[in-house]
Amino acid sequence: MYSFKLLIKYFRIIPLVGISFVVSLCVHAEKHPNILFIAVDDLRPELGCYGSEVALSPNIDKLAESGTLFENAYCQVPVCGASRASLMTGLYPTPDRFVRFFARADKDAPGIPDLPTWLKGQGYTTISNGKIYHEWKDSSDSWDEFYRPPDFGIYNLPENKGLPKGERPAFEDADVPDSAYAGGEMTEKIIGDLQRAKEAGTPFFITAGYTKPHLPFNAPKRDWDLYDYDSIELVDNPYMPIGAPRESMHGWHELRNMYSDIPKEGPVSDAMARKLMQGYYACVSYTDAMIGRILGELDRLEMREDTIVILWGDHGWQLGEHSLWCKHALFETSLHAPLLIDAPGFKSGQRVNSLVEFVDIYPTLCALAGVELPSHLQGKSLLPLLEDPKAEFKEAIFGRYHGGESVRINDFQYTEWVSGAKMLYDHKADPDENLNIVSNPEHAELVQKMQRLLQEHRQSL
Image 1 (cartoon, helix red, strand yellow):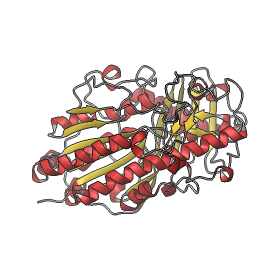
Image 2 (cartoon, rainbow, N blue to C red):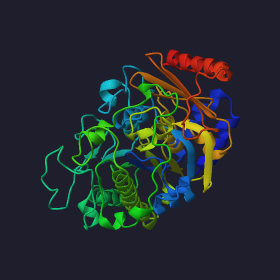
Image 3 (cartoon, rainbow, N blue to C red):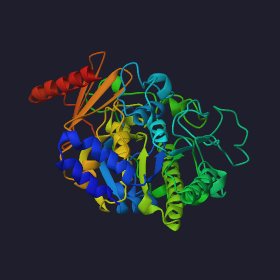
Image 4 (cartoon, one colour):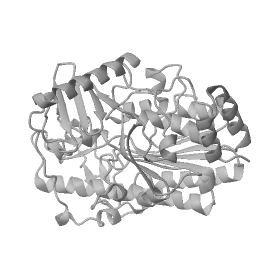
């Protein structure tokens, strides 16, 4: 039987006319590996493996140690539904496609096979668990099974139960077992799915769509107790970046309008900011514990060598940076998200610094699974970086939200809006994006280059 690594090397040395033969050889010579597809809502790279000194994420950190961590992975749209629809189709967003939180692949890109549909056609059993798309019912033929339990608004404290939307608090720390909050019951379901996959011996595409740390920050008291409220440090840039246009800001209405303990205007108090941060971290640790359970079952079943494990956050999240909360912005804090891949046949503990983006995930999983790639994909397989983390990959990556478009190259990120507003940040000198340097004449040539890259990107779609 041929190894994936050997077949990968063939791709590099054979002429183009032989590629279809090698793909066919891979498909028929290898049993397709299972794919465990872990999606975590609102997860910024606030994890131990990404250098956080606060967040406790031992199980995700362990996954990073066994696989490859992408230091500079970016979503295409900083809002859940649109980000997921773009990722799952392998298509970039446009002004009319993948725009809002309720974006759907089948509506925004009709006729395009999304990732589970494509894998299903290659013999995979496809199971959707939790939040993969932003929908509560299966409205497509993508899935053999669809499971979406109640998750966002589960409250357990007696004073919070039964409260209508708008009168609920933004966080809760009830002393209850894991199963009482979002993710616990689903984890049991996923463990059962893994056991079925082991018994069936046929390839499974199993998703684990965890919603926390999405609001409300409700998690067991055990996870809240991991973090000392008084020790949590507030961000050091709770202000609008100098020279930033008003188009770059938003009113964090997702937090303001949904929860009774958040002011309808103006900043939150330092005490509330610290509590929100504690709640965010608690939810990260809660989900990390659930991920640890499914990875532990994968090991117990001795399935690691037959399973591709991928973990990604659908976008970042502001914790008060630039006076913002939630996502919905074209700043680093909204666009940067975790991406980890642990695939059979590759070195452990790798870290990739190259710029990558979420449209690259679909072609990557096809390549790793040994299945043919559909012709519509606009991303690029990350397989060369799994082989060599220092390999050259992309000059530029792209993101957009409503009327704004961003392009990132090396240490610079440039954004422009249909209104004509612009901003440019030097991530080497100013990693927190506190100073907009787009009007600095020293960067005029760079701005022109970024504008040209954006124009070429638009024309390619």
